[in-house]
Length: 487
Ligand SMILES: *Cc1c(COP(=O)(O)O)cnc(C)c1O
Image 1 (cartoon, helix red, strand yellow):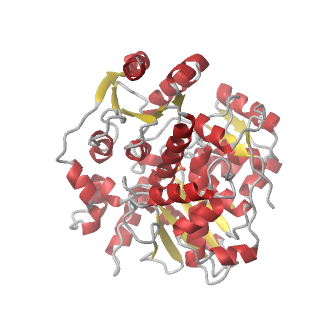
Image 2 (cartoon, protein in one colour):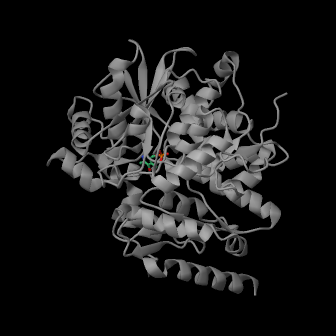
Image 3 (cartoon, rainbow, N blue to C red):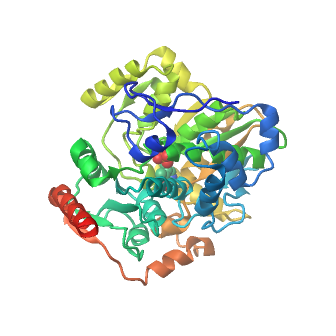
């Protein structure tokens, strides 16, 4: 019998809570991130049995070890999982395909969900679970999130038809692609309220500040039922660990084969999920943390200096992130689950924007992890190279970062190691970058997607607001709405 998992905080000052509370709260009340008090472990015999499962069955096997049946009974959990993935447009849900330029590299496509990015994988499940738990309790939440591209569309789409939540994706007006904007604003859903925000010199960072402000007032949080679905939410990280098992099983001949993963990394949620999979027993031989010109993670792995610098806009905009907040979870495990240490480091980082990791912690984070920084020039070159070979494959710019990372660091792995690159977005989301990469070559059919073509001809509905009025206006409309429903 495995022991029931409870959730504590990386800052060590939150008494353990059950799964439902960790998911509905998002942030731990002490300002840390929720982490499980222990992890399930799968022995090789169990892994062999899991290797033949479909993605939904594998998801159930893993998730049911985290979620006790008195919180979500197995039958309901199965239904929630099935519902979360039935909108995916590939029978394998996450197909594994060959890389056209190197037979030892594989590509795991995580972008077959409704909004064509890997954010759909966990968001569909998270919002369904929130809606399920809230309805049981007779409660309602306002999900407020800042987005620079993919999180907003995934959250908006997942909220359609789930009356226990209202979704408020905030985006910097004119700073995301039209395709991404329309994925939020062309939905016909009374509980989805996209807000385009004018006058954001620092883009998403400006919006993050407003969201943090809203959340830092406990009375307001309670009054308006505010919560968050960004990758601070434990549920997203947990669901993302499944695709490492699935990719490994699809690629291996037998459990134990040397297989590594290359991951285009921004907030470090996806890669931290890979670490969790390894901790749960998956014999992955290593992980590549592939970043663009924003090098916070690269520096941390190279020298132990975890330092925030100014944001550099790049072609792989979803990973233009200078504070990868899931790195705190990773550091928490690397530093032996010591909340006091994380508290000291977090406080120092907030004050001075940098910390230097000690030699022991640096060795711990480097165990099996390598980092690489890929320039925009390299990104375009990789897209072109994959497309112009004998078996053309068009990666999106983020997938190109993980491919370039794998091709660069392959010599560092023992001969015979295969590398699975995580493909995190559909190329149709970035038509202008594709055109730039292909230099006038005719774009392939995979450069467009019917859902985006349809959106281009649909009414948009959105609110527009100036940054300086955003907080007051959000509070006002949420109060009005609450009055209208309950008054
Ligand atoms: C969010 C995102 C990433 C980065 O994932 P993290 O968990 O933030 O590291 C990479 N690629 C795409 C396309 C994304 O939307």
